[in-house]
Length: 165
Image (tube, rainbow, N blue to C red; front, side, top):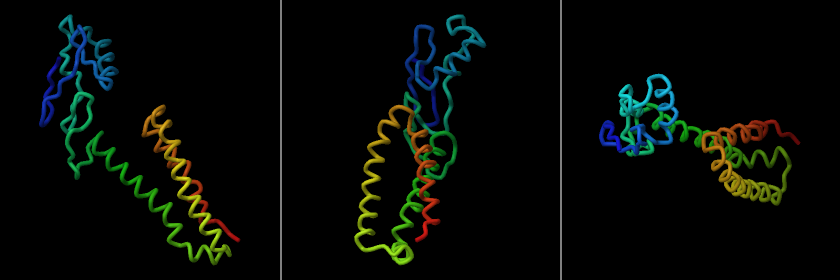
């Protein structure tokens, strides 16, 4: 095991027989370092120099174990802030339509039953989207899934303002 000091805690990373860290995140950096400098066994590489340094304390899989809420340092806190901003923009865009339902109902001459059906379909759509996002996140990851969902759903949200009777 290699002990690498982070800012507030000690991170323990499993290593192979050459002393190279075997974390999922460090494999790419390690193979680049090995190609450039040789093996750890030859004494050319210090295995602790290949472990990335973060602003936050992290565990063995490089996940943050603390939160510095006002920080925007990469990758942990920047990801957190970009996610809540994306959620807020989606929430604002999608739920602005029900807030204007009285005006929309008059402009499009909708019946009460049509408004109820539209609201029901909106809620049911989120249920199906959540079920569909599970496999997407499993296969391609949450960043790709969130980005694809934002791009896909931005189209009907933007086009909602163009609807006419």
